[in-house]
Amino acid sequence: MFFYLSKVFWFFVQPLNLAIFLLLAGLLAALIGRRRLAATGSVFAFLILALSAWTSLGAMMLNPLEERFPKPLLPRKVDGIVVLGGGFEGAINLARGGYELNSGGDRMVEAAILARRFPEAKVVISGGTGELFIDGEGDAATAPRLLGALGIDADRLMLESKSRNTYENAVFTKELVTPKSGETWLLVTSAFHMPRAKALFDKAGFHTVPWPVDYRTSGKEGFGLFRDNAPDSLQTTTMAIREWIGLAAYWLSGRIDQLFPGPGG
Image (tube, rainbow, N blue to C red):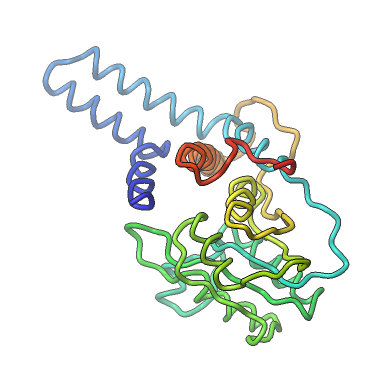
């Protein structure tokens, strides 16, 4: 139930959709003569789009998430590498049988680099189909094709294909791996996603070393206009809002112990 509620809630509150719904509400209000209500809806829709697409607000919201877990020194010995899904174009790969990467594809590139650096380490790909309305191939199904093409032997891979969100990533991956005391496992995901991911793996009893990748900010963000092109700024704002909402929802539901998890706990 949590999965479906979260997907429906996010469909309505993500900036672009919310602006569309506000514009629609304003249009309907205008048709029935409620001019003040129509103007209010239109103004709020404009502000949402302008702040999301024309300012650096999204980057300012995303940067604290990315800075929360600095990349540590690489351990001398690594027993396994856990890579969270979210790096492939699932719908395209389902149709074409390839391994097209999306904006989060750094996760898979880093997985291949780490796998070659630690040839004895197992590589876990955790990610099924997490979309409610879009049909696509899960990352655990696509990753073997890419990693195989990059020289990673199939017998090193462990594929977790049931998970639909980060909570299920943590729970199902622990069940698959059954990590032993003293082992070192790297957790690879986007830097902005690491606070939530690390907290969920800790809560599941799977100790990992955070290995953030896929940075979207420079670390020197300040408020300004037209710091990036509008589509990328809108995407950054959308990711930031989604991640902060995800942290709040997981904290309120008791799935993580802190609203903003960090290296200290």
